[in-house]
Image (cartoon, rainbow, N blue to C red; front, top):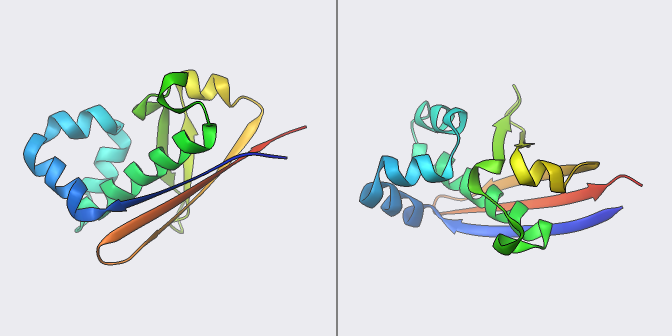
Amino acid sequence: MISGIGIDVVEIQRVNEMIQRYGNRFIKKIFTESEIEYALSKASSPHHFAGRFAVKEAVSKAISTGWSGGFRWKDVEVTNDDSGKPSVQLHGHVKELLQGSTVFVSISHSENVIAAVAIIEKRI
């Protein structure tokens, strides 16, 4: 049974400006070490940071408790399989909250914009 759906749209330039303005302070606040390593390994790292940011926001919206429900940025870690398909690894409070659920994510982008969708399926 679907228990939550979230979507987020992020302007890549906005994330790039945050990286330029706040540097590692911004990056380390939002992203896990493996997310940082992945994004920095790409030629267009702002695109990859923006994609991960959008997924985290989409998951927070799908949870429906929002930030007041104890959501923390690093509790949602975006990974990719060998084909590039994104998925999330949950940690901390979000992992506890979504125990017994599966989170599906998808990312799409144009030159300037990233969109991410998260669907939470609760096992009955």
